[in-house]
Image 1 (cartoon, rainbow, N blue to C red):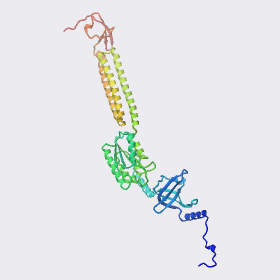
Image 2 (cartoon, rainbow, N blue to C red; image 1 turned 60 degrees about the horizontal axis):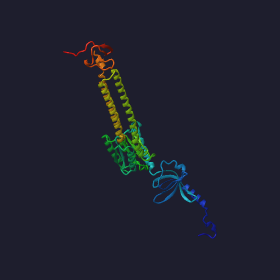
Image 3 (cartoon, one colour; image 1 turned 120 degrees about the horizontal axis):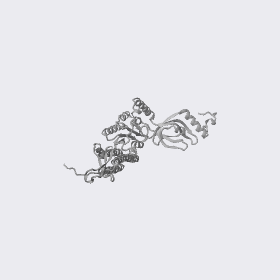
Amino acid sequence: MLSEQTPLAAMAPRVWAVGALCRAVADALEARFNPVSVRGEITGFSRAASGHCYFSLKDAQGQIRCAMFRRAASLMDFMPRDGELVEVQGRLGVYEQRGDLQLIVESLRRAGQGALFEQFLRLKAKLESEGLFDAGRKRALPLLPAGIGIATSLGAAALHDVVTCLRRRAPHVPVILAPAAVQGGQAPGELVAALQALYRQAEAGGIDMILLVRGGGSMEDLWAFNDERLARTIAASPVPVVSGVGHETDFTIADFVADVRAPTPTAAAELAAQPLETWLAAMDLMQARLRDAAQRRLDRAGQRVDQAAAHLGRPSARAAQQHLRIERAAQRLRHALAQRVQRGREQGGAMGRRLGAGAAERLAHAGRRIERLDLRLQLLDPRLVLQRGYALLTEPDSGKPVTSIAQVQAGQALRADLADGHVDVRVSTAGANRP
């Protein structure tokens, strides 16, 4: 019991000013808890124009307000989203203006990321020491793929993005899909099986490159692509592999092992197939070059024909006929080349190689034909006959060849062309040969 001498003032509780009480509570929290680490689910995440971030952490039993100032927020390597489970480090305090309990966050990471990241680094170091990441083993992607394999989930948004991109850029290239889970405990095994199925297609000649794709997510979501067996399977691929896993800031072991790493699934598809317009432009350039080459070849052949005709003086009817045949062959070549290029444009970029080979073969064939015609034309050159001791008789005024005794009479002047010149002669007698 209180004695009669106990003053009533000593029994009264202390009266606090609001601000003083808030500061006292803050000091008590500082001394008792800080620094503090907290695990919880993000809710109400927002980023102000100032760069500061505000959100709450919650679990089944409670919730606490959090603030992350611009300097700390700038150090994050991902953008937090509502519903993500995270671990934060910071200092517990009181926001005196509202009297709210508040956690000032100094660092934030996805929950469990620390242990997973350590596993990631250990496996990365192991495979790197074995040379699986060496630049020397990386292969270039085929310029004109005969077929493209895709390993991903049937329900993945990444599949829609990749197929849409390939249909737009290279609709003529066949695509083979090997479905597999891309998240969860069964995903690594299914991805390995999908790749092995695509390898069999590659060995049969059906595809010559593979896209391994998945959309973005947390480290846990992408963890299947950090599997050692999957990494070794990628390294054993008989054809180049493009890894397009996650967003641009996401890196997995699959990215390091693959021949090419794309920042997104869509970027992987863009790397795999050049747009159709590029090949059509290349075909136009090829057409122009083939046309110019054919024309130069024909011009040279025509020049040889003209030179041969000049040596003959006046070409015989047979020589003129051969010249006409050469010109017709040139016209057919130009027409065939134009038709071939037009068909190639209609069939798409994949026809580019066959167009080039076919046109080149036609050009070579036409060249050989021109050479044979030129040789036959040269064989008609009377000089070859004159070199064997014969002479070509012509009328001096008209230049008309004398091929019959009926064309001459005694005393008529004629010109005799020999192998190395000509002489003027006069007919002494004219009569038919008799046995």
